[in-house]
Length: 259
Image (cartoon, rainbow, N blue to C red; front, top):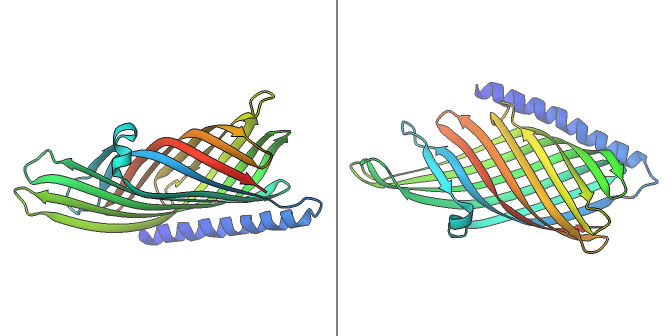
């Protein structure tokens, strides 16, 4: 099974790299247009809900971190940044997200007294873009690329009938991704709505992954805007004794510079 996954990942890379080259070649062929760039740091205040398993022979641990009540007490750190380069209808996108989230609760049985889970995850997306619709103030882009995951999970079980246990596991995988993203102004105002939907995995890396964002934004100047929205991300990955079936959701605050 590991060999099959490696072959599928290699095939995914073999498809994505030529796509990126095609994007660059087509962009360079249109010399009448200049490159446009976007840099967009953002904050994602996300709770978590799902199951994580790293202990062989033991059932998965439930994680339920409520965004409104628990997130500020459970998040240890986070980094979020999106970069984009575009020329004519073609472009490239890079999205980097890092989270370090802790969760602690009592266990229902007598074997252990408590469970503490800490998950550090990197999510790096590289994709080519093609502009399907381009109107004044309105656009719709096709997204095709890959998302790399690195998940470092640690489970600590407090002593009960059994002695305390602590185990860590690090898993990494690549998901092919496809999706759409777009933007549209609200009437003649400086307000706009934007969003994206990305699907991935398809059994190559994770079994399935989907990532949806909806924003309300305001265009302060020609090159600077701010957004407030909501993001929901769900990923289901399993490999031998490792399970990461987690949904993350919460408010997103973003800044964007175009130049």
